[in-house]
Length: 335
Image (cartoon, rainbow, N blue to C red; front, side, top):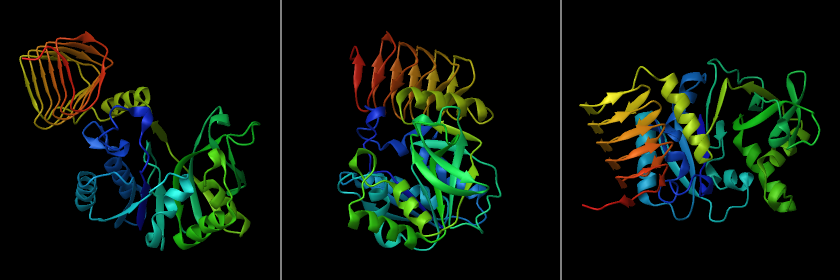
């Protein structure tokens, strides 16, 4: 079983934190979105994932590949990489996986996290599309069904034809057929929203070729695509995983859980929480921090922070503010 993750996008809605780190590798309570996705699938699928295929941007460095290899090694997977030189839509991103589009696999777009029940049935469909019931489907692509089979995909419907929003997760029994469908779009220059090649159009071609499409349901759909959504998802995960929080050093401080303190992180002479994630190697000293994310190796000294993000290897000193500081930055007095 393959896991194909297109992640060449620049993550503009979570800048400045995606300037250095691709959005799918941003941590949510200690583990990146990619690792959480791998863990979810390995816990619910009838067969383990043994290959990870990551479609990267042309300027992604070796550090990104090393982190993805490390995730795959930890889960018994082999990592492969492809490059999307120019962004031309979701179908183009998948097509860039090239020769890896064979056999069965999962295609997932890694800007959301999700939960699903184990025991997903994959034997009687060519494609399984995961969906979530939403009250207002006009903002999403939706699956239209007759009985248990999908009959159409519609992008942002103006009329209520389905409440089943597509969450960007697809099981494909035969990835060669998906590759052929995308090739058809490219050959015929069939472009959808934004004048780009859309994956839903490739699936529509497969539907017209009488392939069997069915749905599966996620029990939770957690957006990480914007700064407010990333913070809300972090709060959700902190509350849900409240028994696995304190891994670093907490000294002479008051902690209002849920507060995650990652390995090697240090909290001294501070009041932190609730809803704070302090990632590995970060340091909070003499500060009050609430509802915030302090990324790895960052330092917060003598500050009062609320609803803030402090990027990796950054320093915030003496600032009673709501801040959003990118990686390798300094804010406040320098000592």
